[in-house]
Each structure stands twice: as structure tokens, then as C-alpha cells.
Length: 491
Image (cartoon, rainbow, N blue to C red):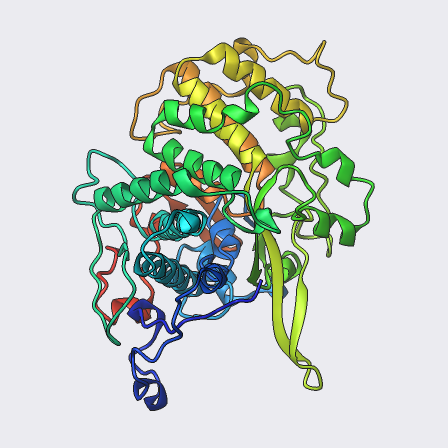
């Protein structure tokens, strides 16, 4: 689909030092979005054209110090130490902030155009996609740049600016909405969008189709603690998820290039939403000093971490016999000047999958005290990732879960209460989710909402600990945004 870009002037996206030529442009000299076709073209850009995995993954407990000083990169070190990136380059924190607000601007322009055309029912699919896309970008922003959601303090906790209208002036000041306001807006956009999203696309897995929208909604309601809504949204996986989850075992005999490419292909049944974005993250496994390492990968993916004491099917590889990775990202390079050998790298990223949906469902079942259903589903999920799994002998029981994941009172600390049995199950699910999405950055969401402590060791330096409620859990507002008046996070 052709991409139709519009002029955006949201100040968190531009620097006050923008060039005179830009400032001399007439703010309303914009492409007129006045047909259904143009609205659909605008929505192609309503998804962040940036990858968060570089900084999100590096902040987690999936990452260790390889000790190889030759692999040092500044942004990798800053992310590992929970510091603000000073750069706005590809794969940085500020780059992702900018990309999210750029996506929001396109979603808002599409919604405004639909309203200007009288909001006909024929445009409901575009309306649904725009609402869900707008919610997704705001959700990602608040997940990284604000404290974790807690309804007891949401009225006063700082969220992010929730932008619901296109900009109509060149320089506009934005204030941060409270966490309650942000979550109320998110819920409104999600529920309204769910009414209208469709699967009627030539390539549905590159849009917020019905199942992808429900997957996003299940992630949102899991954080909010609405277990019944999560269960309702994932009912399509309740009866028989056979063939709908990722078959890691089928990847093991593939060559590296095929494995790294097939993971994000639309032919994979589990993949619900795939985004192509500018990123060099596919190179990180041989560029970053702080990463999953061969020396410590068994702490996450070793057979001792399997409740049945069997090997996992994730299949890590190594490029340099120092760092380790699961092939998930395949870079495609687009030359802007072939003679000079310069251009941009692009990767396909799975934003939502049936795998996440199923784990969200299991967690919600645990919290709804439907333990038997949760245990059956969790056994099935673990079995799909376990070598030589035998459902007749590899039986999951409450005792097995409790022994493997004892209820450590202060470890998992969400805003809601947990029984000891729930603590064990939530710990088990969290560790499975950690393995399944290793190197995708999703572990950060669990660290945030469960207030998990993270220890980062660096050779010849003191261990840095991200304690519970540490202010660094909320990324610092990017410089170009704070310079324009967006309130900084406390440090």
C-alpha cells in the first residue's frame, strides 16, 4: 500500500532549533485527506516506525556483561545502566518516542478526516484501525516513560501527553496527563476501536486486524487487572490452540538465514500483527557487550529451568562464542545511495502473537481462581516448547509448580494481592513468558508491572540494582520534549 505522509508539528518530535526553511513553511499547507483511499494510505503510517527492543531488552534481567570491551557501544551501556540516551539515532529511546507520536499524528489525521466526511459506516474499518493504532502508540509510551499503573495512585502519577486531535498550530505546548487519564483514554479508544476493526485487508497481519486488536486489548487489561475481560478477549484459544502457537521445534533444522526470517513471516499462524520498521537490532547480537551471553544463558533457557527437567526447543546460537541469541530478526537493507553504500536497515517485528494471548489467558485464569483450567493450559503451552514432551508422563501439578517456583513473598509485587498459590503460578508464567520472548523486549513489561528487582553486574564495577519503585523504571523524557515543556520524570 502506498504511504501518504502528512506534515506533523508535534513538538516532542522536533527540535526548537529546526531549520529556518522549515519554520517558514505555512503550517496548514498540508495534503488534503479527503477520500477513503487517502485515509487508508495515512493509516499505513499510524504504526511506530521504530524498534523498542534494543533499549527495552537491555534494561531487563535477560542481559549480562559479556566482559568483551571490544563490543562496547554507548547506547548499549546507557540502556544497561538505566540511563537516558543522549542520541536520537535509530534504536534509541528518543527515536522510539518520536516514532510513537508520529504514528499518533497520522492516526489522529485519519480520524479527523473520517469525521470531516461525516463518519459514514463505510469508513468504520479505518476508524477502528485508527483508534486501536492511536491507543497502541500511547500505551507503549506510557509503558516506558511513566511509572507502573497503580489505581491507588493513578490520579496523581504522571502519564504522558495523550494527543487526541491533529495539530493546528506550528508550535504547541503539551502537558502530561495523569496515569488515570491516560488509562481511561486508552480503554475508551480500545473498546471503541474493537467495535469496528476488520480483517478485510489484502495483508491483514500488517494491520490491526480483529485478533491483533484483541491481543493488544488483552495485554492492556492484564496490566489493569480486569481478568474477566482478558479471558473474554482470548476465548478463541480456549478450546483447541493446536496449530495456533509457535512451533519452535520446526525451526531447529533450518539454516540461520531461514530461521531469522521465518519467525516474523505472516505464514506463521501465531503471528497476529507484524510491523516493518527502521532498525539495526538484527546486528545487536554481535555488536553489544551487554546481552544474553553463552556463559549465563542456561540461567534462562537451561533444562534446569524446565519444570519437567527437559531441554527447551528455543535453540540459541552464537556468532562469536561470547554472546547468544535466538534467531528472530532478519535485516533488509534499503540503499539510498548504492554507490556510497549508504541506506537504512529494516526488520520485521512481531508485535502481537497467539503465544502472548495464550499466556495472558492463563495468567487471567490464575487470577480468577480458575486454577484447574490454568494448569491444563500451562501444561499444554510448556509442552509445545519442551523437547521429548510426553503428555502422559509429563504432568503438571500444583505441587510441581509450587516446588519449582516457591512463593517468595516480596518478589512479584503487583498492585493487587496474590495468594501463595497464585504467586507460584504467576512466577511460572512470568518465567515462561521471559523465555518465549527473549530478546524482543517484552520482559520489561513484566518487570515494570510486577515491580521485579533487576541486578546488572559489570566486571570490575559495583553491581547496579534496579530496586522496587526505582525512579529509573520510568525512562527520562527525551530532551527535545522536555525542552518544549513536557515535565521530566523525577530522578
